[in-house]
Image 1 (cartoon, rainbow, N blue to C red):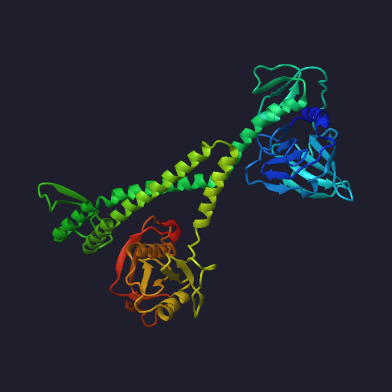
Image 2: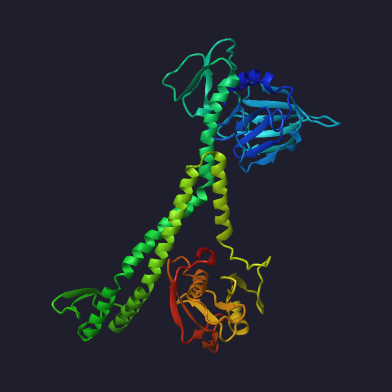
Length: 490
């Protein structure tokens, strides 16, 4: 805020605020609202302490009404304003007050209105700072010389952002911002202030909504990746056809070939050009193609389901951001934004706690407390957190009929699916949630889809001399799932 404008503002505002009582001061970064005249009447001295400010003006209403603003400077509540001054040659507005009560004390609130980010400091007469809000500044800037406009019209002109308007006796039509003419600095600041506040509101909402916009961007990237993987999965017929063609003509294929052209077993009139790995035997390449084709067939429905879920999340985030943008006022926008952020942070990593319980129970084994994650009110999983704890969980805590899960072909935690009572076999959605937990606590957690094997614990054994956490299993089945915690799975 220009030093000359601060000087003029202090002179004009004296008769409006001196001798009046300060109400509860509220702060919602970067806006500070100081009621002058009590709790429900009078005006509000509003300080915007960041871009597009810093700036100060008098408002008829509290700009933070209806927002989750917090109380600041409690010593000022009920205090009497005794003066409003600008510190000599500095862009600092000082509000002097006397506290109420049997013992009065002189305090001053300094509004540091220079640079790109201002600060408010409440101090005693001896200079000791009681409380501050805003940004820590290294030095107090020297302002421009004061300019007197007594009895004449002036304009507020800025060649940059609106918060840097300065008084000018000359109209500058091509200035970036031009307000006026005015005869009173209070009215000049009252006209510029709401425009600066409106821009500050947009900045506040944009900054506050970054977790939502980042999540939306991540979901869009995930959708693009899933759609590309679906294209590959839909090509499973081609992979199987290549495998069957190679199997039919494998005796004619020379070891070490990089490509080969063979008649299509489904259409001998056409030829297939197949890329080969010269380092692997043909029989191994055939087996790998058959296995890949099977995985692609299995993954296709999961990919389609997952794509639908991600699209729903994207639509929901788009609608939420649209609702925030179209809110009637700043308080409504912040209220909706805070509700969305509360849901986002509250459900991202924490598994739901069963009804009637205040804390999540912990299963304790020989190696300590296992990680426990609730899947619903009946089913939960126990997760090992080290190789030794994996062994202890699998062979000393799990029942023979509990399901044992592990990400296929990668290191990861042992996961045991358990239930309260005896509800029988787990539903498909519970099995997939448990598999997603196993995928999440594995080295494949950054993949979009992970194959997870599962079998009853009685079919898992530890070979003689095996390292901690190393096991072999039989009768396993496989499911392909995204690596997520249950809170991420509808």
